[in-house]
Image (cartoon, rainbow, N blue to C red; front, side, top):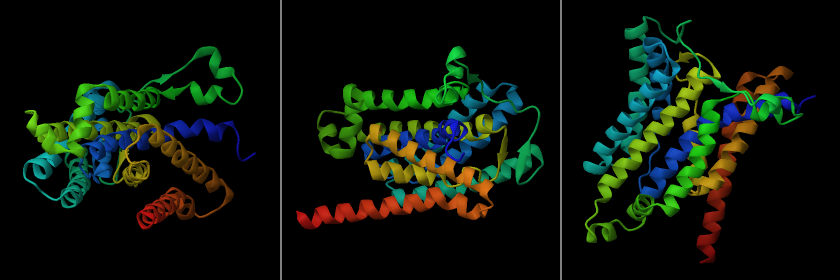
Length: 299
């Protein structure tokens, strides 16, 4: 059977990296920063999680190191974009290139390998088992046995939505993207607010990378983010930074990704199945552009 419980159970672990990166991207979008370096920040997080786990002996240590590395990349972005008035697109491209080059360099210098590093000293983050819930048909595997980051990702979506709409700093963050001069008139710095959004974005993307490297598997491979940061960016653009819709968008892409993995068992070329989420992304972008252009002509 094609659409079975195993297919559904795989969706959360495939959704989580994209959802975390898209949540970080939403913070940037709402603060008025066009950040397309989600891919690079996720890749850095994946590497830092493996390195941190390997040297600390704990996956929690790896998670902390990943968040610090992601936040550092967010701060680097802020320095050039917010404080030096660099173009967001150019800075983003630079961050993505730096992430690819730096992770490849550190893979060789720290571990003496190229391409991929796996070792018994790399430990996975724990899964949360819900006891009797695991035996419930259809939804048992969906809810029980998932990584702690799966639950954290869902919690962060709702927490971030509440933060943006009901917390003073969240309202200021949205104001930084809508009317920065209004913030200055009341003595607030939109630059520092945007910097905070970028640091948080980097940390969230890095946690998404952590899900890839010490949760879904326990290894690091060059380029293992494999375009998931770009998928997250498409979701942010499609949903215009609205987090409830971002959650639904991530679920859709995660389901398509799971279907692609399943189709590999039908003797289809792997390149075809791997391309499914990106074909969907192109379709979504085309439809979104057409809708916006239609609205502009109507106005």
